[in-house]
Length: 167
Length: 167
DNA sequence: GCATGAAATTTCAAGCTTGAATAATTTTCA
DNA sequence: TGAAAATTATTCAAGCTTGAAATTTCATGC
Image (tube, rainbow over all chains, first blue to last red; front, side, top):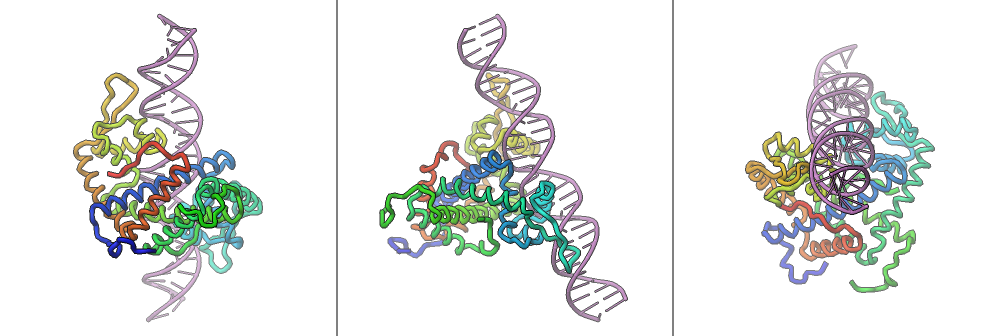
């Protein structure tokens, strides 16, 4: 966080700054899509599953007691209707169980079956390695720097709350 | 690129490093999704269009002479069949034109109509500002650092070739 | 009690995305 | 030449995703 020759981090829309912002964003998008593509492909080929399924299972894995549909969709930051479909398929695959909520006839609790937990544990372990193959090759200080920068973005913006998968 | 106490950027799968990789990836994914969501929402509300349409138009805007379907799909790194559908809708909206390729009865050249060009120019200008609202607030040196790090990832990996949109 | 609004979920139409299969054309090269 | 391989694009089934509408149930206040 030095200051060098930066006269106070101007927030104006100078053409040069706008271009730089765009450049950073496009590069970040490209890198992210690349990693996502690797994960999707690996999930497909090695586990015959999809990223959305993996994400849902990751959330449920973390909350062993189960999650309500609404909690799940807000945790994953996707629409309600979306989760309905994915859960439907996971249920029919025997990876997820739906149980009615005690005092509320509207709500449904979804949780992994033991089989679902076992499956996910394997996928998560593999997933960690895939990611490490990509990011683990970076020098430690670069990784740390990236983490710090992303934190800066996160705090500059309002993208707080609602955790993601991470097994 | 100092060395500090990093004994040569080990590429092993030490648990600590794996966790760090995962942490970085999840944070990067989260930030990217946030920005994408902002762009999608703005495109929807302010231009009644979608991100995939925007991406296609961006590619065609850059190549004024037009692109073959296969060139388009490989530029955007999406499947062939995908592009077919998006182009279909853009054509029926009058934003894109299909023209047969001279010496090849298989191929089709797609290009923006004047109307498509005008529409995209407006969207691209707005898009630049949306992105700058997010990234422009970062100190200049942080932005530069991020760009450098992403370059490192890009080079460490093989995600070269095929440019993206950028208006 | 009971109406009214809030909350939880599903349903729905539209569009995006993929990988595989198909069809048409062009290229290669024996 | 002419058969086989490669290229270009579309079609297709399955699944993901959204925002909006509809449904059911719950909570609140009168």
